[in-house]
Image (cartoon, rainbow, N blue to C red):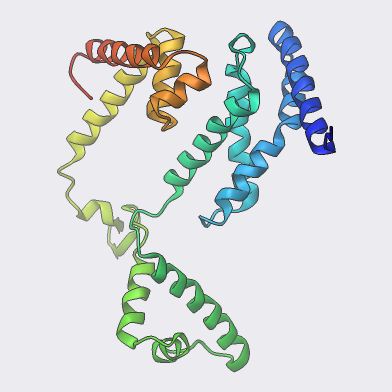
Length: 262
């Protein structure tokens, strides 16, 4: 019977991780947690490699964010469930990276082809500047890209307006000082914003009142985007239990907040 070196190394990693977890659960020493993190850092690297080609974030930033997810998994891992730590940790790592990318994503989504055209145009500008010591005109860029001038202008406008303009941006000078855009734009949604902030605070308070297991299940299902079946497998419980606790947890949150929010 042939046993590969890779399989042996993987088994040794599992055994060493479990041994460290037993000590960590008893002592909660930071150095033990750091050793567990170092042993399982490959999980973070694998997820970072997966996402780096699908976004504009750097590999190093994704590694740092993934490590936050790995630390959270370490803190919440339960040896008694009999689940492999790697299987337990990956959803935390992936979820942390996904939430980071959502927060960092552009407010206005543009077609992937236009994104590629925009990236090509940046390279064209740089090359043109080096060769001719000046910036290319829009017509010259469109010619190199082999698209119409009208399409290039649309792409250019879309790339420029991907991000919102800050309300703090200065729009002019007057005798009393600079005027910001926010001073000139009415905000009819201010009251709605206040209500949303209040709802968020009430929701955080209501979550703190839930049992740990119920709160973890809601976190897996609604924050980590896992199905109830996946959450059940990660927590080592039945799908029926997950479904029951989700329903109970949501009812508790509704009652605690004083109104229906789901």
